[in-house]
Image 1 (tube, rainbow, N blue to C red):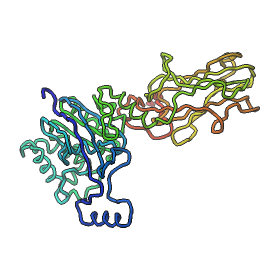
Image 2: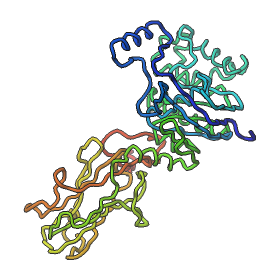
Image 3: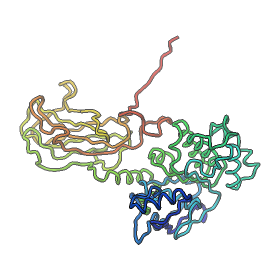
Image 4: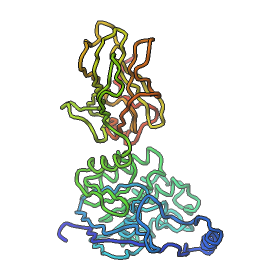
Length: 429
């Protein structure tokens, strides 16, 4: 395998629909009762977002193949039901594949859900030694790492308490600390870090970064695209159980994932002679970069972006106002911007004919998310040409990442906006 530590070849996983076997009699009876009454199975975990159903079987993974080299930090992304967790469970040997094979070199530590591998009746101390033993560590090795694990997990006051009394946050802190500090060659992490608080998430992401720098391998599933972009050296995009993209261009995979979710939104509006208004007739509206190229992909918040509004003026009127209204994904108005917002001496020159209005969209000003940009065209306090939320053309775009250079903001910031403002200090002595 050379420096390859994980090789997945033509992996497939199928589940038989209708089979009752949930591990407990209570859940089996629940499913059986629901089936008799023609109701949906309350214990079913199959999502309509991924896989395919045929001849009474559900295909969760189909012909998945990829390789992971030593030291790679691989991000696995995709919609809910795309097969991400199923893939990790097969790699972790929690479940067996229907077909295909996996070759692994080295010890594997998995954190697939809160408290993976923990015995609820045992204390935190006992579970650390239990997990270490399962991973193939000697007692001496576990003793050497013990204090570091407890300090990282921030559970020193509860280390001799049975973990069944831990909160979900304490559970995941200790579980991550054990998995990350017992030096596995391959660390597999599902979306469990969402349970921890912001401070602990930052610690976890920093630890994962250091693990990758030490030459160990990390497989990371997350819906936090900032974490994927900052941590991962490679990415795999799963769609309906297939590998849609495997690349070392992590941002390309993120763009493809986000743009698929926004496939019904148009990033360019382009029509001719639709309003046929003599004062202003829109022909095209779009976003562009510093090279004056149209932007179709997801935008990083630190990019320089221009809003472009092209049209034709047959008769110029001094009361003309052209601009846009910006709405967030909850349809809340963020702001309006018009070409004549400033003092009159600073207005751009407007003359009859074909014309382009363009304006800088401030970098590091908006928050992460999806946005709608609607045309504003009017004669001031006289008439609407294009009125937002009534008859205005619009374009859509998405902002992902680039919020700040601060290590404290790896996720979407609170609030409608996320401006990065200059701060200074002065000595009061």
